[in-house]
Length: 111
Length: 117
Image 1 (cartoon, chains in turn yellow, red):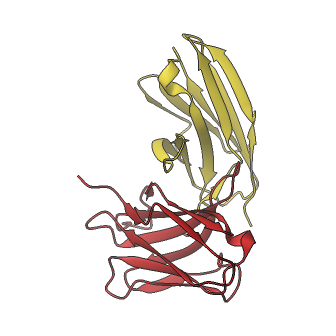
Image 2: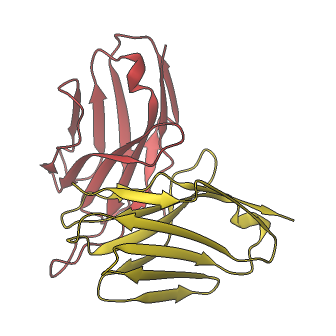
């Protein structure tokens, strides 16, 4: 089955700096890659997703890049703000409907 | 509009007891998913419903776990003879019908935190 690795597990940045989280996946059949933000006591919230026919997607301060050849994808957050502090999860969908998640990255943005 | 609703938000029970966890999906979403999230880890897939039928239950850990969705809307996850290792957050997600083989984004509820004493 699919295996998703996520790095780093924790990331601390200064407010206003950029943050980058990277994920790799194993199943070349995966064609959909969402990113979720999870705050304490809440469920995962979809923040951006990308499909395999696109290399990059941007939404305001958030962007995701996908390299299908290397089987990795990354989340980029620019101009970070304290409210960006949360746990971020990447996921991959190898066909079907079962998302496989990475282990999560705890992002801390220091004011 | 209203998001995915899960009840109860917290459940504490003793080892060996039976529990039921409820999920109300977003209106109009035909697909419903259950995931389990242990502390410090990402969610893990349990079961997927398309309409009333379980299309994929490959993630259920054993036969103590069962889920139903009798009318194609609300779903109940049932756990018999609970064990301490069942303690986790149980998340439900729903999505719109996919078209042309293209899946739709999954939207999650806030989960039920289950603690087995």
